[in-house]
Amino acid sequence: MVNMDITVIAERPKVMPQAPRIKSRIAEVLKVDSDRISVKATTNENLGALGRAEGIACFAVATVS
Image 1 (spheres, one colour):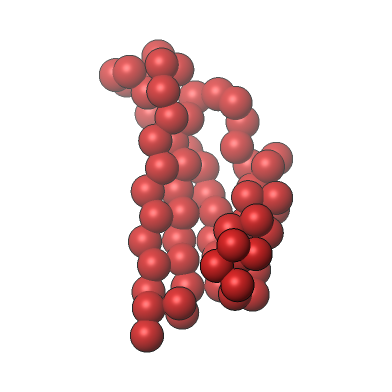
Image 2 (spheres, helix red, strand yellow; image 1 turned 90 degrees about the vertical axis):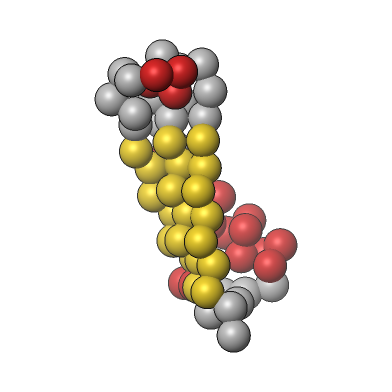
């Protein structure tokens, strides 16, 4: 794996305080350096089920070689 970009969509809980721990754990599981992992978070601006805090979504894109 060259790198991985992860985006978490959630109104709550706040994700960014946990981002370093998430990044570290994913790097450990994938057996890569944590600098190859990017974790960021956003909200759905109160729109739809995610915006009503009825769920959490996550998108991950990995570049492999």
